[in-house]
Length: 216
Length: 216
Image 1: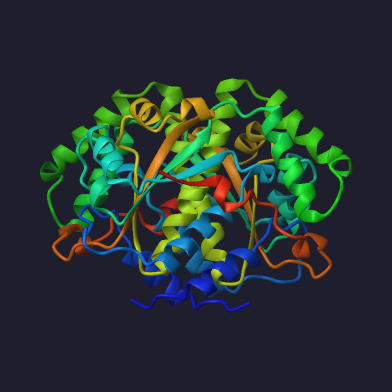
Image 2: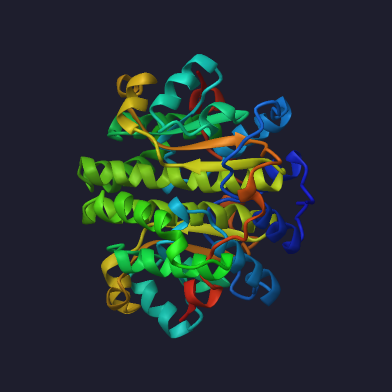
């Protein structure tokens, strides 16, 4: 375990900001990008169920189409990488079973030995929620991945801008998500800021700590 | 800017796990805890609106009561710190105005000069969503903070276990959240693992990267 200093953490979280202008000439190295993908994969989720898929939009033609469904926000085409955080729209028993099979494989145990875990997941997520609740639950998990990505990128000195301003239905159509049982939840444009982005130096607006962190 | 190496990031994300047993004798230092609170405050959110409050439960009597509303999961009382992530239940124009006042203060500009931002926030969040959608939106933001906290803690070598298994209504009652316009969304138990926690060394179960990260 090689930990970092708390000042370094806070410095990097202060360094990051909601990047408006990405430098389209600056690309994240393959090694750093692989690390950020690995960070996404390592995101924790409720009961470990990972009800998500992360789409990385490499094709400039697809990016150009998505731009039209993103109110023309240039980050969609200018950032080195664009991640569409997609969520399982109707998490099912088949999804639980896929997780259980993977768990059995990774842990070197039989699927049957994980029956208790399976029942618990089926009961609490599939049977215990209606479709809307289940989708909300899955979207919540997806946002953990977003928070993880933004912080991970900041630590690597890479800019990441979360974006909710896009037309989800059009994204679903353009990326064929419905056929995969997915729906677009949120985006992150990831890359390197342009020096000219005036927002980079604007003071961060946050409520004072004493107002948002209450001790009980 | 002092960035970290990608291997260090991935090592720490692999080091973390959903801690089941916290060592109740190990407390996070005041300095490290202050850094984690600052990390929470620095979490990005949609339009910067921060529709959340983070409650840190210091009082052991309150923790003992919350344990009864948490299916007896010992992390609630054993972890060095317990954070209840509370969300604004019905984000309102008054909330937008509080943000605008804070933005004006931090940026040294008049409230009037931020009229465009105010209108956009009112239009998209308050008027553009019904109460349920608005609550879901606010809960989503809260989960960004959870993702940020878990990753930030891991980098400091501190264990953080997200927890959804608790009775939200009882938490709201016990902590008087309703009267503050808040509702409990999710928890994080934060502290140091017990050496005897067998889950610490269990291989992490994740779908293969090629299955959850798709290139388009």
